[in-house]
Length: 80
Image (cartoon, rainbow, N blue to C red; front, side, top):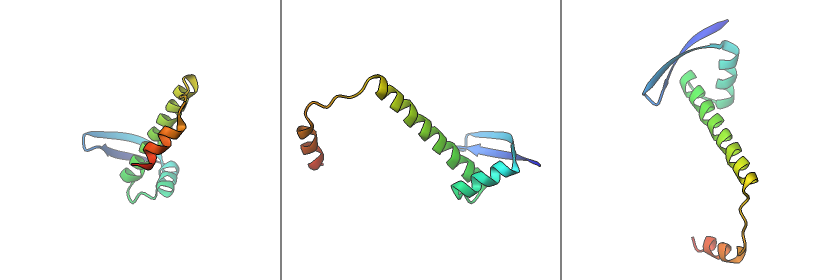
């Protein structure tokens, strides 16, 4: 069975999506969101965060950061 879901994102956009009940229930269970909107919002934010990290890792693999003076960096971090 499919359920029509109305999603309001950032109070600016209203979206109608047809998503299976099973998927919606799994998202609610994993995110522990109290509403469908909250659960889907949490899941989408997590998805964006994960993909942003993947993109950053890809850029770092292509152009790694070289640390030539670790002692100076450690001193700065300890003073923060």
